[in-house]
Image 1 (cartoon, rainbow, N blue to C red):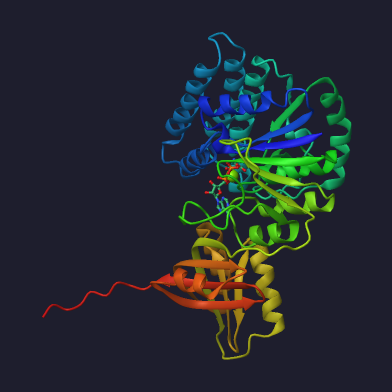
Image 2: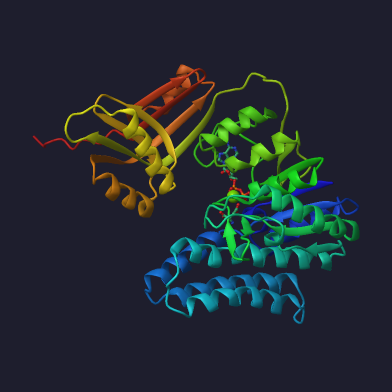
Length: 428
Ligand code: ADP
Ligand code: ASP
Ligand code: MG
C-alpha cells in the first residue's frame, strides 16, 4: 500500500493531468492512496477572490468567474461534452458563490478555509474522473471525513485519535474495492463539519497523515524537480540533487524554510519509518531523492533563502533588563498571533526577532507590543541559512549584502541580510 502526492504543478492543466494518468498507468494493479493539491496556482487565485470579497471591492465575482472558466476550459480538453464531471465541478464551485453573495460577517480565517478549500475539492474531482475514464479504478474520497482537526482555521491541528479511527473505518473497504483512492491535500474537517485548512503547502502533510494512518510501505511526492536539491533552482543555477537524506536532515532543511516539502511532513513518516521519495513527474523513471532512516551521511552545503523577512527590535521603555517574565510574555504573544520566530537575539534592554512579514498578523502583534515596549522594525530583509556550510559558499552569498544578524550553531549558519544600497554620488 503506497501513498502518492501530486502537487499543483503536476496537475496545472489538461496536459499535466494526462501526464499524471500516464504515470499511474504503470501502477494500475497496485493499491495507492493519492493526494492532490489544487491545480496550478489556484490557491493563490482563491486568496485573491477572498481578499476582494472581504474588502468588498466589487471584484470578487469577476475573479471567481475567471477561475471557474479556467477549470471548465481544462475539463473541455479532458472530457466529452456530456460527461457528469461538468455538473460535479459546478456543484463544488457553487459553495463559493453562496459565501460571496452575502456580506462578510464571519471571521477572516474561517472564511479563508471555506473559500480556499474549494481548489482541492475541484481538482480531486477532476483527476478522479479522468483516471476512471482511463479505466483506472478510482474512488473519490472527501478528506474531511478522515482528517479531523480543531477549529484553528488556516492552521488546523490534527486530532490524531479521531483521524486514525476514521481512517481505519473508512479506508480499508475503499482500498479493497478500488485500485486508487483519490483525495484532497491541504484540508480537514472539524467535529461540527466545518472545513479547515492545514496551512499553505499543506498537501505534503496530508499525504504524510494518510501514510501514517495506513502504515504505508512508502510515500512519493511528485514534483517538478528531480528530487531535493542543494538550493532552490528558481534562485540558483548550480544546484545538485541529493540522492539520500536522513529524516533528521530533511526536518532540519524544512524547518529552516526549504520550500520543497512542508515542514510538518517528516514527523508522521519518521515515526513509522516510512520511506519518502521525492520524484519528478517530468521524469518518473528518475531515482529522485529518498528520505529514510539512513544513518548520517556527509552532505554538501545546502542553502535555504527566506525572503520578505522583518526584524522586530523590542526594547523596554525604562531601561530595565529584558527578563524571563518579559520573554515568557513575548512568546505568548507570538503564539497568540501565530508568528513563527525564525531567529532571535537577547540583549540587556532589548530583544530582537526575525519573522516572516505577514502584514495582517504583525500589525496586530506590534499594536499589542507597543502597549508595553518600544518597537522598531527593519523591513525588506532576507534570511539565509546554510547547512554544512563552507566559508566560500557563505562569502559568495554575501556579495553585495550587509549582515544585520548572524548565528552559527554547529554546522548551520544563519544570517539576516539586506542589499547594500547603491549610493548615488554627487556630480562634480
Ligand atoms: P508542489 O507542486 O508539490 O506544490 P512546490 O512548488 O511546493 O511543489 O515545490 C516544488 C518547488 O520547490 C520546486 O519547483 C522548486 O522551485 C522549489 N524548491 C525550493 N527549494 C528546493 C530544494 N532545496 N530542492 C528542490 N526544490 C526546491
Ligand atoms: N493548494 C495548497 C497551496 O497551494 C496546498 C498545497 O498545494 O500543498 O498552498
Ligand atoms: Mg506546494
